[in-house]
Length: 211
Image: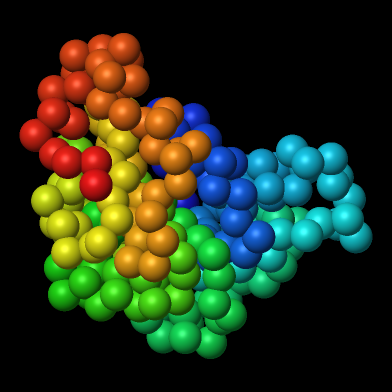
């Protein structure tokens, strides 16, 4: 879908707010919500409200041109159309890449190649993907919307630094082979913090390591 449930927004954007990347790539722009919120929490949050004041560089990658709408022009410095593996090499290196609610659309081989490329391209890769992947086929004529895989934190143990957060419905993973996870991010996503959100969240997180 070019949109997604709001249940992960607080966790995802709290992490991005604390990372405070000066440059970011959004993989799977869709409707453009992520770009708008990224712009809000990287520029407008710091009282840079108008475009001439903006300092954060936000790029987007989208495979389905029919999703284009005015939000793309407002929030992003540039949106490139095409397969992420083909498009990413032509974009500048950035501090962070966000791949939110897209990983379940990738086959394992494609996901492995994309993960490696992202971790070469950016200091951090932020992934959000559902714990339970429901059947989904073609949406709005977009074959890329099919759900073809399911992921857990165990699938990312080859990455040097890993922060695992959980909403009870989605995994939120912050990955890096370049830099450790900053303490200001780590301290707010410890397991006991998730326990306070309820047993549904904590039971999913319990078997997995945060680092």
